[in-house]
Structure formats: C-alpha cells, structure tokens
Amino acid sequence: MREKIARLRTIRRFKEDKKLSREFLTGLLDLARLSGSSRNCQPWQYQIVDTPELCAELFPNLAWAGYLPQWKGPGPGQRPSAYILCLLNSTWQKGPETEAYFDLGSATQNIIIGAMEEGVGVCRIGSFGTGAANLFKIPEHLSLRLVLALGEVDEKVVLETARDEEDIRYWHDEAGVHHVPKRALKDVIVDLERQ
Ligand SMILES: Cc1cc2nc3c(=O)[nH]c(=O)nc-3n(C[C@H](O)[C@H](O)[C@H](O)COP(=O)(O)O)c2cc1C
Image (cartoon, rainbow, N blue to C red):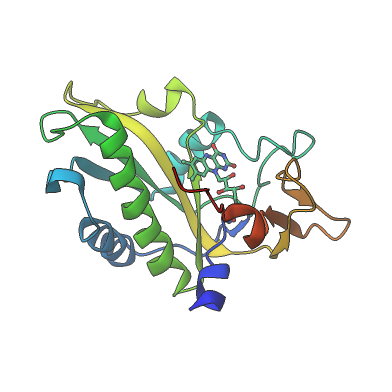
C-alpha cells in the first residue's frame, strides 16, 4: 500500500496527444461521488472539459508550480488533454465551507487513485484566474473552486525526505526530474505531555 500511495504524485507534464475518453473521465467522477462527505451533503458537482479547443482556452488561466518561477508550466505537446472543473453547489452545501473542502480533498484523491491506476496523472490547480469560470455560463448556485488537469503521464517525479523544516519546495533537476520533499516521519509525529 505504501508503494501505491507514494506513486500518487501531482503530475504537470502529460502526453497531450493521448486523448482521454468520456467514459474514462465519467468513471473518475463516479469514484469522486463515492467519497466521504460531512453531513453526507455531497455538495460538489463536476464539469468535464475535453475538447482541444476548450482545453486550449482554459490553459492560459492556470498557474503552474509556484515554487518553480523559471518554469512556465507544461509546453506544447505536454499540456493536459482534459480537465475536470470542481464546482461547489451552495444549495446542497449544509455546513461551513471548511467541511465542503474536506469532502473535495477526499473526492479528488479518489480521482487521482483511479486515474493513476491507468497511467493518467492529475494536477489539482487552486490557483486559476477568473477567465476559467468565464468560459462557461455558471448558474448562481455553482462556483468554480478547483480545476483538475489530467493526461497520460509524461514526467518523472521522485519523492525525497525534507532535510529540515523549511525544505518543502519541490524542484527540477538538470534532467527535468521533478523532486518532491516530504517531511520526515519523525517530524510529523508529536509526543504531547499529558495535561
Ligand atoms: C488544494 C490544492 C491546490 C493546488 N494548486 C496547485 C496549483 O494551483 N498549481 C500547481 O501547479 N499545483 C497545485 N497543487 C499541487 C501541489 O503543488 C502538490 O500537491 C505539492 O507540490 C505536493 O506534490 P504531491 O502532490 O506530488 O505530493 C495543488 C494541490 C492541492 C492539494
């Protein structure tokens, strides 16, 4: 299980010419739908974007890899071949937004698990411009909160252990391999004294 989870990395470079079928993308949303939900209110809905024209219009509205300012995001040929827009439905949402965001974390993790099983990578993109939502006529009760970029994996990503507390910035080496530092196990476990 650890090995499988370690492979569930954010992917930002894709085989753009490998199209993802509607059936495959719908299947991922079926996995999202089965995730846990606070108050079981299941307040998220999803829009599939999979035509080359719409993908090309959406792309410039997305911010990629904030820790790599010299890298301008995936270049032509390595851009996502599909997207899933995650929309919060305010009429279905019962509790505070923090609860809805917990649900979105679980739902999108299910999507990542299902996608990776088929060699498809996902990048969750919370940093997007208003132009993304403006591509669609979005009704009042829905609001765009997260974009998932998807495509067949075309990059190498390796995990490493963070050297110290500050070492959380991912980086690219000379070969273009993406390195992701994760805090050491000993550093995430606390040992609190009893009251
Ligand atoms: C809620 C959320 C929002 C994110 N937004 C972005 C984003 O706007 N752009 C981006 O390139 N990556 C984004 N990421 C990906 C993170 O940078 C990535 O999860 C982190 O670098 C750790 O890599 P890992 O997912 O492989 O563990 C986001 C991840 C999460 C969970």
